[in-house]
Amino acid sequence: MSWLLYTMAAPPILIVFLRALSLVLPGKLAQLASFAAFFITSMILMSCSAMYGVFASIFLRAVGYGGLSQWTTGRSFKWAMWVITGVTFRVTNSGGEEALLTRPAVFLGNHQSELDVLMLGCMFPKYTSVTAKKSLKWAPILGWFMALSKTVFIDRANRATARAAFDSAATTMHTQRQSVFIFPEGTRSYAEQPELLPFKKGAFHLAIQAGVPIVPMVVANYAHVLNVKKREFHPAVVDVSVLPPIPTKGMTAENVDALMKKTRDAMLDELIRLSHVSGQGNGAPLPRASGRDDQGELRRRN
Image 1 (spheres, rainbow, N blue to C red):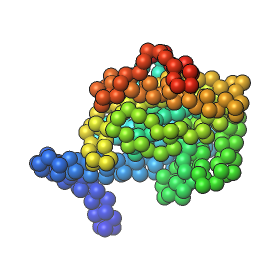
Image 2 (cartoon, rainbow, N blue to C red; image 1 turned 90 degrees about the horizontal axis):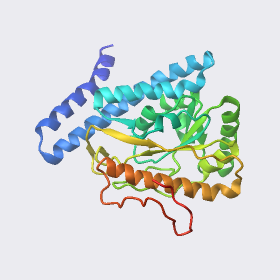
Image 3 (cartoon, rainbow, N blue to C red; image 1 turned 90 degrees about the vertical axis):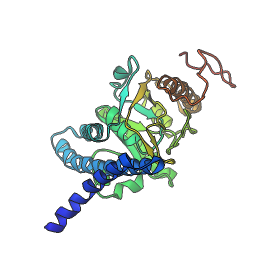
């Protein structure tokens, strides 16, 4: 029994020790100690939230509210991280909270780093599920929670099974009014400036197939809060804009490219604007009030 107590006590003691070091060590060493303390704290809190999510998912599915599993688990992570680490995300634009109530919808977000898990915990609408790579399904605790909470698992190496997963998701969206959240960049950018990686088409095929709107969620560049490459962390509140829903009814597969480009342009414009407002523009020019790109497509009016 004593070994179990020692095992449970070790991480908190290490975190306190690292935080104390960050207050007395000089420059770079203090920065590394603070980053290590944040990383360990985040992993512990995420594991605890996932364990809570396992039991919450079982209970909610038993009483017919399984669609709320990821929302309630995300909120537990949100408050734990805000209280203990001092970092959180908030919607700042007018109409953003209302746009989050769109149901069902395909929610899209820019993917900057591992901290986006917290962004989901803060922003995640009710009756929404994430998509995730299939390998996560077998991860202890986190995989159990995701499997129980209607996560759409995608096998990126197998196009046929990936398409089948999206077909199933489209059916669920219709029958249960369950929304889906997707990072269309497909991977983390670790961007230090307000920029986006190229988008993948899966989210747009899904939205058109299901006939539901796309709701873009744009997170300001937060390299000043968490910079994984430089091992830096600083507590802060990160701004998020939720753009108006983009309808897809009546569209077909032929419209995917245009829809993807329209969505990405709108998100990039808002990302640059939002990052300038929060003081993290890093030299990127503000988007034009209106104009046309090289293909002559009308860009979103700011």
